Image (cartoon, rainbow, N blue to C red; front, side, top):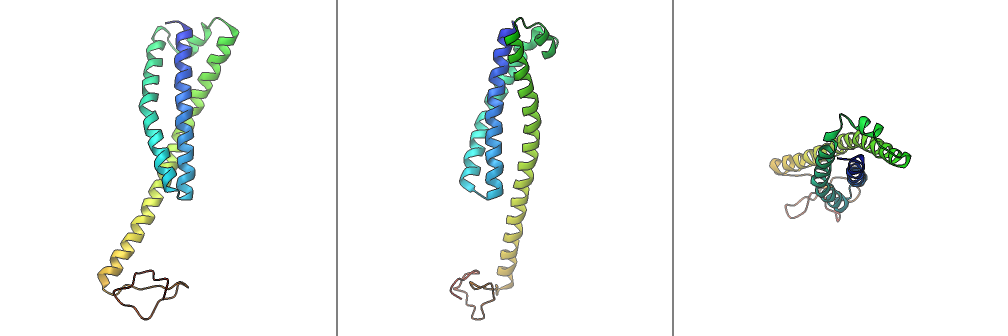
Amino acid sequence: MSTTGLLSSLRSEAELLQGLLTQLRLQQQALVQGDQPVIVSSSQLAESLMPRLQAATEARQQAQQDFDSLDQALAQTAGLREQTQFKVCLQTLRQGSQELALLYQRNLALIEQGLSWTDATLSSFVQLQQNGQPAVYGARGSEAADWSPERSMCDFNA
């Protein structure tokens, strides 16, 4: 395949990678802010981009088979304009893949932190319920003395 076809494949792959990075950045912000609807929508969009990115990567690898490496393909690119575009696409893909790894690690840590907090909170409520007399806290954070089973654990009218 020609370098023009390979360049087209690189552009497509770089564009999809940038879209995935955008969704993962949004997901990270939403995880920090606890914005559940944005977490769900950005996760779904990122998930839908992944198979398309995989297909674009496979297409680029297929187009790259005529060359020993992308650097060799760059050296065989004819015009200065194409060479510049080729370099930009390569740089975008290399930087994007590094950023992808970092975003994935950070988002995973944020998700694990959120799950840990949820688990600890749930465990506390279960333990209170198993003790038979859960503490009921009023609006000022003090324990309400007049507990009854009809009241919730966080009674704002206490």
